[in-house]
Image 1: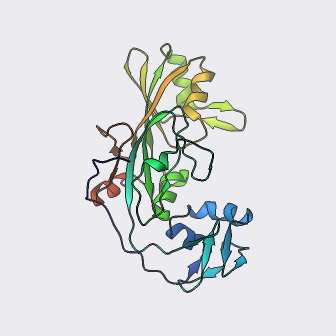
Image 2 (image 1 turned 30 degrees about the horizontal axis):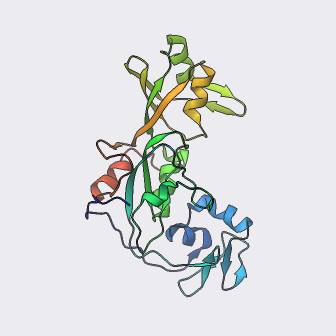
Image 3 (image 1 turned 180 degrees about the vertical axis):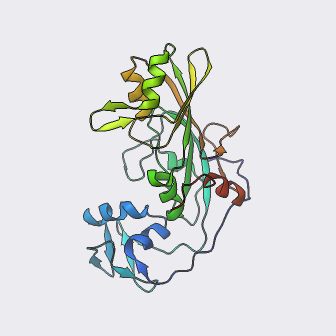
Amino acid sequence: MPENLTDIGAEEKNPAGEMNLAKFLSSAGVCARRAAEGLIREGRIFVNGEKALRAASKVTEKDTVTFDGKVVKPVTAYIYFMLHKPRGYVCTMDDPHAKKKAVDLIPKGDYRVVSAGRLDKDSEGMILFSNDGSFIEKLTHPRYGISKTYEVSLNSPLSEKDVTRILTGIRDGRDVLKAKEVKHLHDNKYLLVLMEGKNREIRRMMESCHKETKRLKRVAVGSLFMKDLPVGMARRLTAKEVSLVLKDMVKQ
């Protein structure tokens, strides 16, 4: 577990009243609201001993809600972490067979945090964790328009044609893979800014351009950069940093 954690954190009070089940699960740090339906469908959510049927059903703090048999408690204070994920770690929250999980690098406490998006096992860099479901939702849903910035090292340089394809969009199955910005740093290293987080999006774009991704590192989410946080270390975000992440969010 990381040792050099800052004691400064961002906390926001969250009074618990009547709300729909999806919002309750989100506010308790179980999942983003749009992921609640899937957990309910899988039969993992119970309310007062009965299997939950609808994400829109109403619950209050007097109801007993369980997730995978464990009681879900309303969050009374939000907490936010930045992690520099090492290569070799996975971002799954539920796989009991995963030996190296990114969430295990977050300091243990009386809270349950989830990650805002994922990085594949072979990638590294910045991942944000929180028990604030609304924060997670805003960082992961494309409609909020929060960018993610990556450093990409390739086996050979991109051509002008490659860059044009990446900026205009590359069709790959049902997906259109696209970067908002491509900046040549030096040699075979580039900075890419993405607005969505499709599965292995950068690696798939590079494969389409007949390039091998040698190293992939996320360095920023929104306007918040990871800077010099050591690999494998986590720290609390300040209130100012939480605001910075959401600074460029599309107004809804």
